[in-house]
Structures are given as structure tokens and as C-alpha cells.
Length: 142
Image (cartoon, rainbow, N blue to C red; front, top):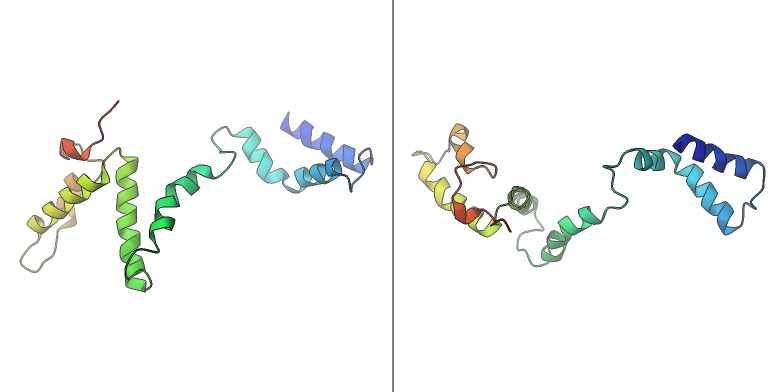
């Protein structure tokens, strides 16, 4: 069905039934130029029509970056990316970021050895998808 549509568009352009300089002709030419991308969108229902969800998810980052200190250094940008990744992962796992950060920042010092190192195997219960997180970290279901 999708292939039939694009074949029809190409036929209209090749037969010059639509003037190429008209708005309709320009629209049909755009369809031909974007055929690969449009086929994916038209055949896969999981592909969004726009990138609004992506833009919404980074809005807080874009607004806040002007206010963050040390964002202009490589180490600052790396630290910022780490904190932002933890925050977004917490949100995706239906956690309240403030309480989740408070929990992990109080638990991590307790797990340090004498050299300040933490065994990664001991961090499973602090992951955002862990069932062992306190209830205050979780968003209430409506």
C-alpha cells in the first residue's frame, strides 16, 4: 500500500500532470526525496511523527545549563552528564529524583572501604529499578 502511494507520486511527477514549480509539485517532490524516512514512519506505528517527546525531555537541561557552575569545563560537563543521566533514569523508573538522590547520597558513604572505594557488586539495591528502594523514592500511583 505504501509502495503504491509512492509509485503514484512518482508517476504524477514523471507525467507532468502537476507543474513542478507549483506548491503541489514541490510537495510531491519532497515526498520523493524523503521516501526512505516516510516509509519507515508509515509502516512502523512506534515511530513518532515528530521529536516533541525528545525536546520535552531535554528542556530542563537546556534551561538549567546557564545556571550551573563549572559546566564550562570538561570535568564539569562530565559530572553534569552523570547527574542528569541518573535523574532521567530515576524519572523513567517512576521515582522522585530529589528523594532518590537523597537516598543514594546517604547510602553511598556507608559502603566505602577505608580507601574510599565502593564495590560495584554492592550497588544493585541502589539502582533505580531496584525493588529495595524506600517508598518515599517512588511516585505514588494515581
